[in-house]
Length: 542
Image 1 (cartoon, rainbow, N blue to C red):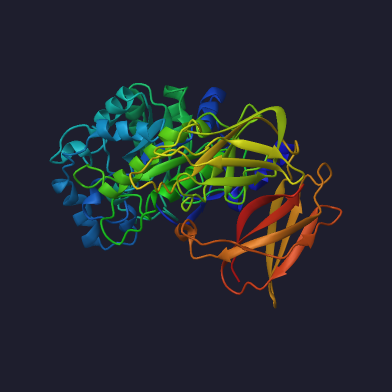
Image 2 (image 1 turned 120 degrees about the vertical axis):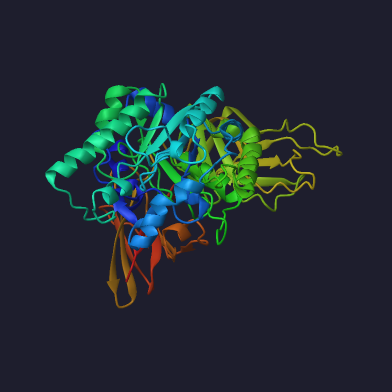
């Protein structure tokens, strides 16, 4: 029954955005044609983190990758295609250094932009002169990336766009991402052009592990690449890949969320707003708690080097992963994804990792007590903190042991933050409590569907439903909400405001009216056995 309803739990019911842009596009057919082998999708479920690299010649201008061509003047377009390649020389691109850093951060694969929508090819292609080998760099940069990634022991991933603005320009077709019209002969030429490029990518660089297809038509790419590389894992184009957002609820099927460090996919030297290392670690934790993976993007500078802001954040993530990798690699979701600011991952159904994300003010040497409502202790339960032995703390003789006590309200866990990570003793990032040999308080959690919103005089009439209401016991629900300022801004949004509890009807439905007069995000929340379970996020636009 659980799997039956998980389809409904993806944010916006399968609506997602196309890579390197912030507007939403349909992806309803993502899983209709899927030849991914089960073992490859299982590998992705076990993989917490990958590195995405958006890099092309327009990094020289620090503007949006490719998309500035849509609606551009003839003069702009001509100088873009004719002049920019003449000055592109990423002589400081060091894929070995990037791969080493990615591995330290816990990444198991790297996805590199072979060709973005502009049509500029980052490999030695025979299909066009609009490529890296016709720049001052001259060399096959993609081969350097592939060799370095393999040497680091990471899996090799390609990003490929079948959309090609250079092809459109050469055929005197207006550059657009919608309503591109071609006659039958041009369409055949376009498909053949795409096929030949895919054949080069799939035959000239050895085994390719992952492919991310961005844009349409995807079918030629999928057919060609799976034929030549049957073990290839195709992500976008075959499975769900929500972009710049996290699903609102747990998903059982393999999925990944691709997210930028700042707001841009390519290099943006000014007017950029980077997420903190703590925020990026939080996104990784949320992805794993909800059953998926994080594909985190970087955009090298025009000379190929990583911006220091991006390197800094990867190193902060590396430090956290070095301490806490056990709660990220090869884990599954717990019966629920979180309780308040504490997120959960699990192994073997009875080892629980309680990831305390609200730890910035938790001073080194301080003891804190947490109540975990969704777990029950057994006579074999053991509690520890990842990274520390909980026996010794530097310069002190305090008791830093881990304790637990089962109470009527839940499992009470008491631990000390006892490991020194920073010189100033102020490590702000999440602390992970490991609980071995515990059981979930219930075997089946409520499957919460956030329903539609109807504009009414008082604001918004919201609906929700417990989909498995016949098999679980839940009496009350509510709707949480917060202002919506745009897709990218969602990742910078503030705290949710909790609505008033309402009763759940006999058929599992519930509803409430909230005074929402502008654009808001909202989600349904259901209480089961004193544990709050969230549904997916949705938008209300009056």
